[in-house]
Length: 168
Image 1 (cartoon, rainbow, N blue to C red):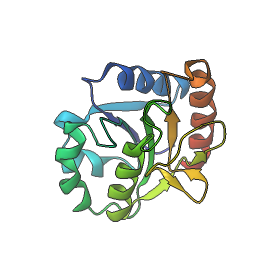
Image 2 (cartoon, rainbow, N blue to C red; image 1 turned 90 degrees about the vertical axis):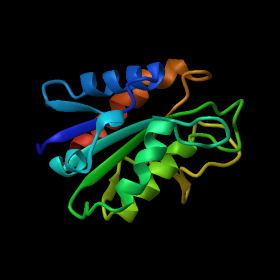
Image 3 (cartoon, one colour; image 1 turned 120 degrees about the vertical axis):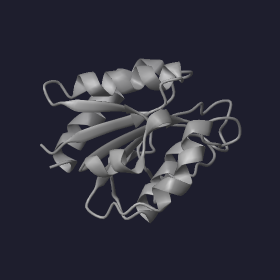
């Protein structure tokens, strides 16, 4: 399998926990952890397969560390890169912008020419709208540790198995 880089903000505990579980679920496949707070263009261009993770803040915003790097991302040339996005959100308290961060990152990477992989079903979630929703699929793995923590490990395991096929 080609090199995989996992980018997320180290300062967000829940996102970091999910990232660790994703890395662990890949088993013997090496996953490089790259803190997005210190990532540069060359870091994204180093990997053929990229996993990015974020939480959604407030009313559908990206955390500052991602928000600051978006202009740089959209200027990259990522034509032959595959990108998978995971995001954390709260579908009960924020049903009108559940996991919008996934959608925002997906848009940025797609505008840079990357191929989006790791889409998941929106079934089994209860929300009104999301920038992560496209044609009844979520543009990545949605994790709601506030309301569905009991489903987190299975969702991660299933998603990683899917990525192992899509990253080939």
